[in-house]
Image 1 (cartoon, one colour):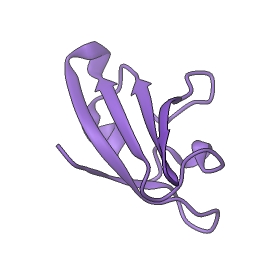
Image 2 (cartoon, helix red, strand yellow; image 1 turned 30 degrees about the vertical axis):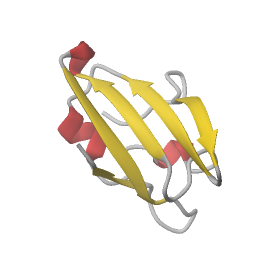
Image 3 (tube, helix red, strand yellow; image 1 turned 90 degrees about the vertical axis):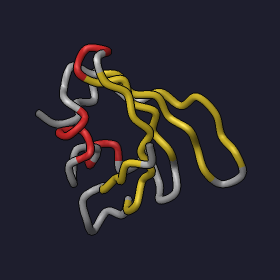
Image 4 (cartoon, helix red, strand yellow; image 1 turned 60 degrees about the vertical axis):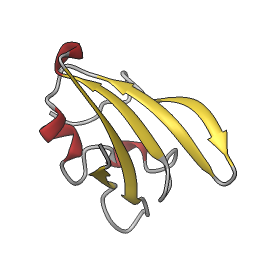
Length: 81
């Protein structure tokens, strides 16, 4: 599956020029980390933002950093933890 705007990421904090987001979904972390998963949120996230993820209905958790978020390419993330 892919990120759906009816289950949006939620901004938790803003620090300097970047934000910390929280996202929870039933998808596995491996799906959420895949390139383009958050492309529908391209107008919200930006490079350097972090996303705290609760995945697989709470069975998995991870911290992602947004590595690319421009309109010309899909939003990409990378695992930090």
